[in-house]
Length: 83
Image (cartoon, rainbow, N blue to C red; front, top):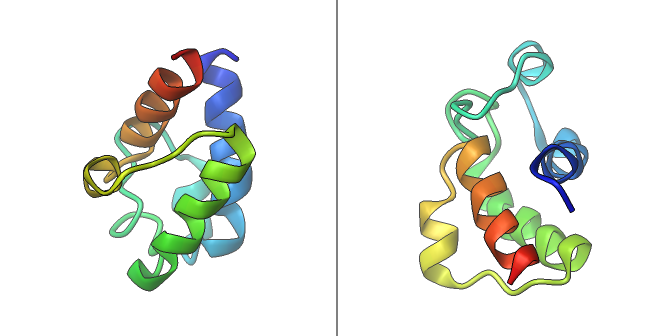
């Protein structure tokens, strides 16, 4: 699975949780999940669980803590999918 494929799937998973639709429409690697997309921090656990299911990976606490931007998430998942 390529990084663009992973990013597309990540965006599909994030879409129902996004409160800032305008920012989501222009999301890129530097887009911050909480601040820019206005995703509720309490929903991050649900999102991470969906990532695990969609990509058939396990996301540890350290990885979850580093997942601040769209680019962080795509990079993390790329490394796990390729492993």
